[in-house]
Image (tube, rainbow, N blue to C red; front, top):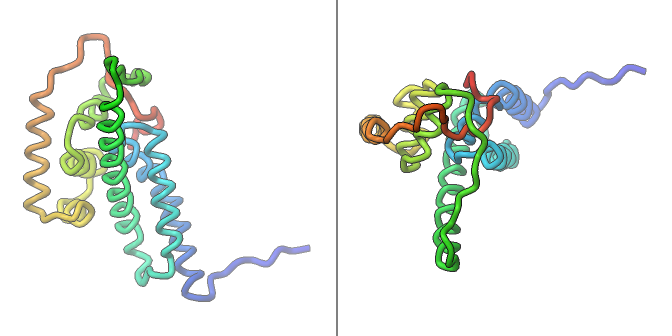
Length: 189
Protein backbone atom coordinates (compact mmCIF):
# COMPACT_ATOMS: atom_id res chain seq x y z
CA UNK A 1 0.00 0.00 0.00
CA UNK A 2 1.42 3.41 -0.90
CA UNK A 3 1.83 6.04 1.76
CA UNK A 4 0.38 9.43 0.91
CA UNK A 5 3.02 11.99 0.10
CA UNK A 6 3.01 15.13 2.27
CA UNK A 7 2.72 18.30 0.29
CA UNK A 8 2.40 21.65 2.05
CA UNK A 9 -1.05 23.04 1.40
CA UNK A 10 -1.72 25.67 4.04
CA UNK A 11 0.30 28.53 5.45
CA UNK A 12 1.10 26.51 8.58
CA UNK A 13 2.40 23.64 6.44
CA UNK A 14 4.69 26.02 4.53
CA UNK A 15 5.98 27.46 7.81
CA UNK A 16 6.52 24.00 9.25
CA UNK A 17 8.41 22.87 6.13
CA UNK A 18 10.57 26.02 6.24
CA UNK A 19 11.27 25.37 9.93
CA UNK A 20 12.37 21.77 9.29
CA UNK A 21 14.53 22.74 6.33
CA UNK A 22 16.19 25.61 8.20
CA UNK A 23 16.82 23.51 11.31
CA UNK A 24 18.29 20.68 9.24
CA UNK A 25 20.66 23.16 7.57
CA UNK A 26 21.64 25.19 10.68
CA UNK A 27 21.48 22.68 13.54
CA UNK A 28 25.25 22.15 13.83
CA UNK A 29 26.04 25.86 13.59
CA UNK A 30 23.33 26.75 16.09
CA UNK A 31 24.60 24.13 18.51
CA UNK A 32 28.18 25.29 17.99
CA UNK A 33 27.18 28.86 18.80
CA UNK A 34 25.25 27.82 21.91
CA UNK A 35 28.04 25.50 23.09
CA UNK A 36 30.66 28.21 22.70
CA UNK A 37 28.48 30.83 24.39
CA UNK A 38 27.75 28.58 27.39
CA UNK A 39 31.20 26.96 27.49
CA UNK A 40 29.79 23.44 27.42
CA UNK A 41 28.50 21.14 24.68
CA UNK A 42 25.82 19.75 27.01
CA UNK A 43 24.60 23.15 28.15
CA UNK A 44 24.74 24.32 24.54
CA UNK A 45 22.56 21.37 23.50
CA UNK A 46 20.03 22.22 26.22
CA UNK A 47 19.91 25.88 25.20
CA UNK A 48 19.61 24.94 21.52
CA UNK A 49 16.74 22.53 22.27
CA UNK A 50 14.94 25.26 24.26
CA UNK A 51 15.41 27.60 21.32
CA UNK A 52 14.04 25.13 18.78
CA UNK A 53 11.07 24.35 21.00
CA UNK A 54 10.31 28.03 21.53
CA UNK A 55 10.46 28.79 17.80
CA UNK A 56 8.37 25.74 16.94
CA UNK A 57 5.70 26.79 19.45
CA UNK A 58 5.53 30.20 17.77
CA UNK A 59 5.73 28.93 14.19
CA UNK A 60 2.37 30.48 13.28
CA UNK A 61 3.83 33.96 13.90
CA UNK A 62 6.34 33.62 11.07
CA UNK A 63 5.22 35.67 8.08
CA UNK A 64 8.47 35.43 6.13
CA UNK A 65 10.13 31.98 6.18
CA UNK A 66 13.42 33.58 5.06
CA UNK A 67 13.58 35.43 8.41
CA UNK A 68 13.61 32.11 10.28
CA UNK A 69 17.44 31.84 10.30
CA UNK A 70 17.83 35.21 11.96
CA UNK A 71 14.99 34.47 14.38
CA UNK A 72 16.64 31.18 15.40
CA UNK A 73 20.01 32.82 16.11
CA UNK A 74 18.45 35.79 17.91
CA UNK A 75 16.40 33.48 20.13
CA UNK A 76 19.43 31.25 20.75
CA UNK A 77 21.48 34.32 21.68
CA UNK A 78 18.81 35.46 24.15
CA UNK A 79 18.56 31.96 25.67
CA UNK A 80 22.37 31.86 26.06
CA UNK A 81 22.36 35.23 27.83
CA UNK A 82 19.57 34.03 30.14
CA UNK A 83 21.51 30.83 30.81
CA UNK A 84 24.70 32.73 31.66
CA UNK A 85 22.84 35.13 33.96
CA UNK A 86 21.13 32.25 35.76
CA UNK A 87 24.44 30.41 36.11
CA UNK A 88 26.12 33.50 37.61
CA UNK A 89 23.25 33.98 40.06
CA UNK A 90 23.34 30.30 41.04
CA UNK A 91 27.13 30.37 41.48
CA UNK A 92 26.93 33.46 43.71
CA UNK A 93 24.21 31.83 45.82
CA UNK A 94 26.19 28.59 46.10
CA UNK A 95 29.37 30.49 46.98
CA UNK A 96 27.61 32.00 50.00
CA UNK A 97 27.09 28.53 51.46
CA UNK A 98 30.42 26.94 50.63
CA UNK A 99 33.08 26.94 53.33
CA UNK A 100 35.84 25.17 51.40
CA UNK A 101 37.40 26.48 48.23
CA UNK A 102 35.33 25.72 45.13
CA UNK A 103 37.13 23.45 42.68
CA UNK A 104 35.69 23.79 39.17
CA UNK A 105 35.08 20.52 37.35
CA UNK A 106 37.82 19.57 34.91
CA UNK A 107 36.75 19.50 31.28
CA UNK A 108 38.44 17.22 28.79
CA UNK A 109 41.43 18.72 27.04
CA UNK A 110 40.88 20.14 23.57
CA UNK A 111 42.55 18.78 20.47
CA UNK A 112 45.19 21.45 20.00
CA UNK A 113 45.53 25.12 19.41
CA UNK A 114 42.66 25.17 16.91
CA UNK A 115 40.33 25.08 19.95
CA UNK A 116 41.97 28.06 21.64
CA UNK A 117 39.10 30.40 20.89
CA UNK A 118 36.76 28.47 23.21
CA UNK A 119 39.30 28.78 26.02
CA UNK A 120 39.68 32.46 25.39
CA UNK A 121 36.14 33.70 24.83
CA UNK A 122 34.83 32.09 27.99
CA UNK A 123 36.64 34.90 29.85
CA UNK A 124 34.65 37.63 28.10
CA UNK A 125 31.34 39.22 29.12
CA UNK A 126 28.37 37.79 27.17
CA UNK A 127 28.00 40.63 24.63
CA UNK A 128 31.69 40.65 23.73
CA UNK A 129 31.73 36.85 23.64
CA UNK A 130 28.71 36.78 21.32
CA UNK A 131 30.13 39.45 19.01
CA UNK A 132 33.49 37.71 18.68
CA UNK A 133 31.95 34.28 18.12
CA UNK A 134 29.42 35.57 15.59
CA UNK A 135 32.03 37.59 13.66
CA UNK A 136 35.27 35.63 13.95
CA UNK A 137 33.92 32.07 14.13
CA UNK A 138 30.57 32.16 12.33
CA UNK A 139 31.41 35.04 9.94
CA UNK A 140 28.17 37.00 10.40
CA UNK A 141 28.03 40.57 9.11
CA UNK A 142 28.19 43.48 11.54
CA UNK A 143 24.56 44.28 10.74
CA UNK A 144 23.43 40.72 11.47
CA UNK A 145 25.36 40.71 14.74
CA UNK A 146 23.86 44.05 15.76
CA UNK A 147 20.39 42.66 15.12
CA UNK A 148 21.12 39.42 16.98
CA UNK A 149 22.55 41.03 20.11
CA UNK A 150 20.16 43.99 20.14
CA UNK A 151 22.77 46.65 19.47
CA UNK A 152 23.99 49.01 16.77
CA UNK A 153 26.78 48.39 14.28
CA UNK A 154 28.88 50.88 16.28
CA UNK A 155 28.11 48.99 19.49
CA UNK A 156 29.16 45.73 17.84
CA UNK A 157 32.41 47.29 16.62
CA UNK A 158 33.10 48.58 20.14
CA UNK A 159 32.33 45.16 21.68
CA UNK A 160 34.60 43.47 19.12
CA UNK A 161 37.40 45.92 19.86
CA UNK A 162 37.05 45.54 23.65
CA UNK A 163 36.77 41.75 23.41
CA UNK A 164 39.77 41.39 21.11
CA UNK A 165 41.84 43.66 23.36
CA UNK A 166 40.91 41.54 26.40
CA UNK A 167 41.76 38.35 24.52
CA UNK A 168 45.14 39.76 23.50
CA UNK A 169 45.85 40.61 27.14
CA UNK A 170 45.06 37.11 28.45
CA UNK A 171 48.07 35.01 29.49
CA UNK A 172 48.72 32.00 27.32
CA UNK A 173 48.42 28.43 28.55
CA UNK A 174 51.59 26.60 29.56
CA UNK A 175 53.22 24.64 26.74
CA UNK A 176 51.73 21.22 26.06
CA UNK A 177 48.36 22.11 27.54
CA UNK A 178 45.29 23.19 25.66
CA UNK A 179 42.07 24.76 26.86
CA UNK A 180 38.70 23.08 27.26
CA UNK A 181 36.74 22.24 24.17
CA UNK A 182 32.95 22.20 24.30
CA UNK A 183 32.81 19.37 21.79
CA UNK A 184 35.22 17.98 19.20
CA UNK A 185 32.38 17.94 16.63
CA UNK A 186 32.81 21.70 16.20
CA UNK A 187 36.28 21.72 14.72
CA UNK A 188 34.91 22.84 11.35
CA UNK A 189 32.28 25.29 12.62
